[in-house]
Image (cartoon, rainbow, N blue to C red; front, side, top):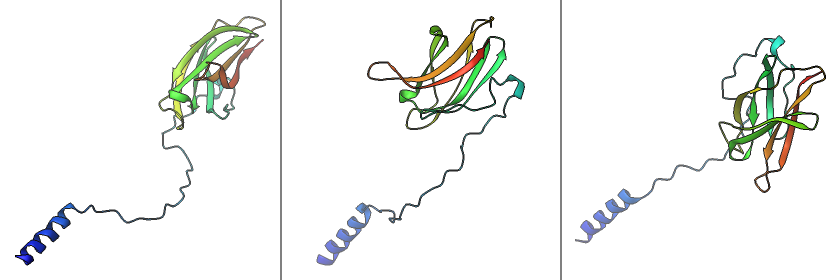
Length: 152
């Protein structure tokens, strides 16, 4: 009887024991590039600037002029709730404002792409696009990234 009880107890323990994977030491991983496939760059004559813009919250930002008053804005952002905000200003006057979603929220870098239609260029115009993250506390502009669209 004792042998039967002991055998059943060992079988029961074997069935209910949790198998733990072996503990291994984590090795540092060097990330050398993005895992997202990159699209080929546009022809150089359509770029507003050949430089990519960036700061602590935005990176690899490019602005492409698709015609005289339409611009395609692409890049990556690490923003709260995956929402970035933007404003187009002429001097101190706000021309247009808006919000866009990225495909991932902070702490990940999310991709974004959107178009902006601005008034046609006039003599003396000086338009700047400002990307920013709105503060969750009071809505103020944080980590602004100004990009000159066109001047005179």
